Image (tube, rainbow, N blue to C red; front, side):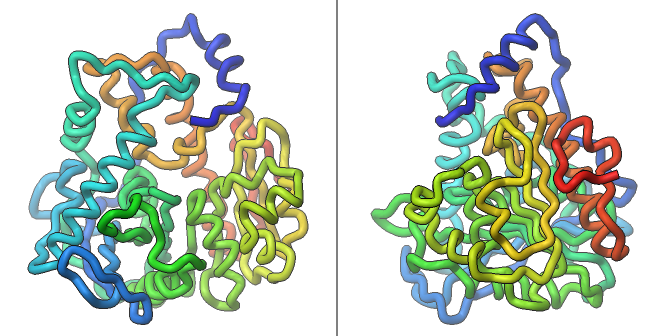
Length: 384
């Protein structure tokens, strides 16, 4: 795990504090429904575990509902699907790999150290199983017919999870948005999870999911949020006019880089895109650089960019609610970084407010107003 030095200073400053166990950020006033569907990416072949055909996207849609028949689902129930034949096996293999990634990135290590957390007498698998029993705010519902709600498409990071940001999905659905997420990885026999089907930007899958999102609504407000690799894909692919109306880039991992040679070597397609493309939509770029924005490599982009940089250390995985879930079980599974985790949950909640304010400004054709968010983030350019 790569950590920046601010963690040590923050840990020392907070060591004597006792922080109450945090919960998810407050929901809006609308009831949240969740639906799933299956899409296929024509032109992107996939062959594994008895399946041979276009790559399947296991899509989840969070959306507001008027009535529900049953109580909210547990996290594990969000993953349940009615599938037959080889697709059932593919989905099962995908879940096995996402569970492994969950443990590696979201359970195993504390925020401020490289030694694994000692959950004894429990195993990491038992901790994960307990987290999967946590309740959500989502109710099983029918896939909405064409409505007038704004729609958000979410793209996870490398080795990320399709449902890694349930809190984010529920935040927006409870405030009148549809939130669409899917897998951008597929399980491959004998290959590491996250190995791409094609070593190139996955334009076909991104376009397929955005096209599906547009079919859900009569609104022109279709937005894209990408984390890490998902944000990198956004910079490479979203320059097409009319594709989305706003783009939120959540820490590509290039934000603090200043060495052009290093960036060209590690992220050649993203660097080329930043240097050559014009982005016709407003962009909210977020990253923890331990400094103040703007971010050096992104200043060359021809785009209307608002930069946010958390004033306190904010972990790369903390942009996902999956990484914060263990904070809800600190009473059962004591964790050495519980004070730091409480701070991460707070900043995550402020990030949700910032994105909502950004989308509201875009929809209203108004300037973004940071307001109280300036207590949590450095903002550039300066905002009222």
